[in-house]
Image (tube, rainbow, N blue to C red; front, side):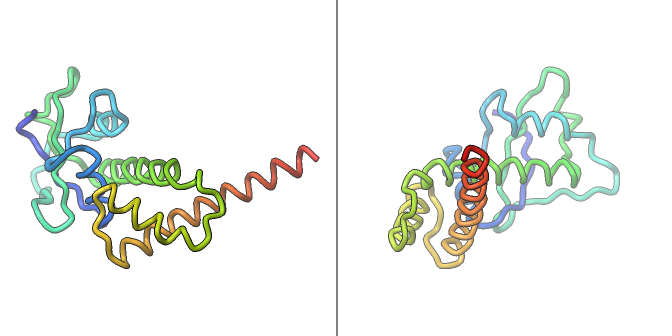
Amino acid sequence: MSEFVIYLRLDPYLAQWLIHEHGGNPVEFPKNSTENDVLELGLTPKPILATDIGPGENHVPIVLPFFKKKDVRKNNYLPGKARRALVQCIRSRFVIALWNDLYKFGNIGKQKQDLIWAWMESHGIETNDTNWNTIAKIYLRKRDVYRRQQLRNQSKEG
C-alpha cells in the first residue's frame, strides 16, 4: 500500500458504500480499475497555493497507487475537475451495482421499500430515511429511463 492518500468528499451513502465495497478505510482501488485510470490521468504536483482536503465527515481516504509513468511522491494532488471525474466514476459504479441487484425484481411495488432497506444493509450503508430516499430516487430514475427505452424498442419492432 502506498503512503500517499487523498481525501474525497462524498455523499454519506456513497462514502459508506465505497468503504464497504473496497473492504475498509482507506479505500484502495483494484489494479487497472477505471478509478485508478482517473487518478493517474488527473494527479499533478501540488500548486503552491492549493489546499488539500483533509480528514472529516464523509471525507473518504483514497490510497494513491504507484504508477509506472507518474511518481506519486511528486504528483499527489488531485485538482477539482479530476476530483469531480473520480466522484462521477464512483457514483456510476454505485448506480450500476444498485441496478444490477434490484432491476431483476421487475415491478416490485410495495416490496421495493423492503428490498432497498435490505440492499442498503448488505452494502454497508446506514439505514436511515435520508439514505433510503436518495437511493430510491436513483433507482426509480434509472428504472424509468430503462422502461422508456424498452417502449421505444418495442414500438420500432412493431
